Image 1 (spheres, helix red, strand yellow):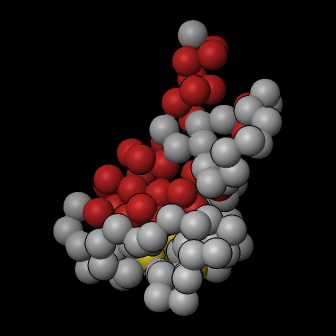
Image 2 (cartoon, protein in one colour):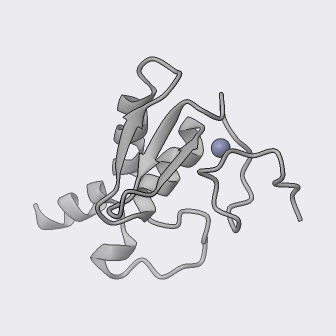
Length: 101
Ligand SMILES: [Zn+2]
């Protein structure tokens, strides 16, 4: 198993991917106000997995905008390669928009 002890707070325990960039690039806030500060990569994956979450700027200029855009095309729980992708809640926002058009 990958050593995940030096990863950002936004990284999901089951997501084996390493951080990309500073660990305090942005902060993701869920619908209940819980905050997780993290790198751009994991923040985007976290944002895509949480219903009603939002992203706020951190230490990296422009990172929140990039995270928002990346989350839009990232599937919820993207690290689950064999997860079913048949329901709207299992697909990315971009995929759901394309399906409606
Ligand atoms: Zn990270």
